[in-house]
Length: 192
Image (cartoon, rainbow, N blue to C red; front, side, top):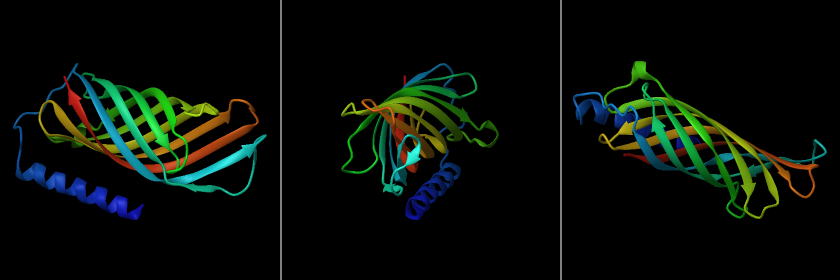
């Protein structure tokens, strides 16, 4: 995780220096009312807990999740965004895939933005179903990151998210899996 944080810090710092050295646009990019599609890939680490009748069974399990998110969103008048998301995730490389549908809200920090560099906070909820149809439940994510506007139609997305996931076995509602994990990710958004 420290290596991922160091890489993210390096990339963010590099973009900030590039922004100050080479200004792509002398005017603030206005995307009010624009729709966009995008994707994000993230990976990280965390723990999962299995419970039966709300009592933990065994030790916590270390996980190394990967999360891919596809999104359709709209920019409002404050450059904040509302996204509809389709997410696939795996808690470990040999785990079955979880599929989620939900919404995200992205709030930009206007006071410290530049022409092309836009910091943000995000949060969202999803309904999640295991691809083997054994478990279903909910996930929530809180995050922060930076959008970097390459031009008026394309932006890069670098971000950190804290993820909570609660799944219940469909055939036995007494069995639950709780997952808590951190991810670092990158992505692209295409405005139209």
